Image (cartoon, rainbow, N blue to C red; front, side, top):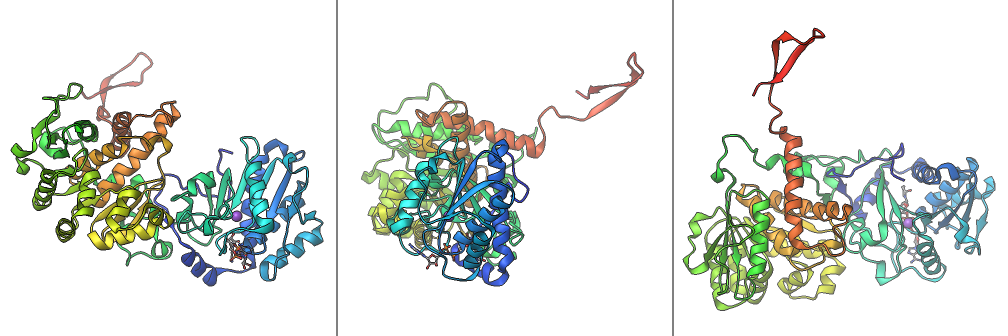
Length: 552
Ligand SMILES: NC(=O)C1=CN([C@@H]2O[C@H](COP(=O)(O)OP(=O)(O)OC[C@H]3O[C@@H](n4cnc5c(N)ncnc54)[C@H](O)[C@@H]3O)[C@@H](O)[C@H]2O)[C@@H](O)CC1
Ligand SMILES: [K+]
């Protein structure tokens, strides 16, 4: 289904608030009444009807309902479909214990919706399946009949038979994107989030289970896209904005800070970035990063090499100025990106110390992070240097920085991000599926762009170069990280749409794609060069209309 049904909001590209379970519970306590479940069911039924399309009369729908309110949503959805003449059956292995869910069960039963205890033998004959087993109330791994139903729902998913998860795929932790208790999770083709989006739909393993995510605000949350103003402070704003533990990263948050490309600009206008790394044998990473910085619009790019064996110049990009670290004039740079291919030698440690001392905004990536993990004194100096750094650990680097293991970081990515920020007091980008960006004095961002094409060598070096280029263009560390992460992921998506990935996407292909996306966004913001004023000439054409011509 590609069109947006009536009750849904198409939030893509908007900075939507992401509400954790506690925030959802607060909204429920404040606003819940029986009509809420009916509205959730209406939205779900609308989705199912839209995806049935012209199969409304012929196709059957299989709904799986759990014992709580998620099951209640599913049962009222079944009831609404039944009333509209759709052949629908509901599998209810455990009768709801009470409240709205029990009332929904009774309504469905009395209306004659076929209610089954087990999955029917002909389940594969359905046109659409609905996962209403559990939502945000799941406390322990799916077991018994629910485990079997989750497996059955996952196996029903196919390109021609959608499985719709209500609120979230059953078994997924709404806050962390991990399977609850390490148990099974329904693999859905689409997820209809009720009231608000949840962080777990976009981070951790979430994206592997949700399929496309839709939002039905149910008239409760304004579903508010986060404004740039409210995103600046946790304390300001109102309603959903206050409740947001994180915000979905979107161009509206960072685009206003990008410098305009005015006619009178010169190369100094867009800053100088130094990409620092290049140990003997690993200069490629540094060049990859430097090329990305060029594509992201930095005015000048230095590649600063610690080791030997660097080429005199980068043949495809002779614009990059290659420098030896011991001769580099640190004052010539406005921003630094430190770590790509840098190694962990004593001279690398000394160069990192020097970079920290410069007082310049800097990305600390790759080996710079490993050096910080190894050297507590250096880490303390970085932490004391204020909020001008952007740390970009992948989960393994984050684990080393926190003295833990990768599994622990992945089990609670938002928690790991908070710990890193408490320790280093600066912007932190925790990479992975659903990259998290912890900003100073503003809610964290969760990035919705990207795909498996980014899971290859060098993509992190490209990201470091992009962030460095945006810092050189005087974006704040938070905005620089948000812009780079968003377009880096979006580039992987647009390349994949043209068949350049996800398989075989090379890191170097990302940078020109980011350039295209960025220029498109700047054109939309500022108008296109050549969109100059029109002037009406005094004479008229043969038909008597005044002729118009560009001013120049
Ligand atoms: N409360 C409300 O006002 C609304 C709730 N909504 C729906 O209700 C959901 C939340 O409802 P609930 O809080 O009832 O939670 P769930 O429906 O997610 O399930 C909780 C129920 O399952 C039981 N349970 C938990 N883990 C279990 C396990 N592993 N095996 C067996 N039983 C288990 C709990 O004891 C509880 O009875 C949301 O995700 C959403 O789908 C929406 O309809 C919007 C309105
Ligand atoms: K569900």
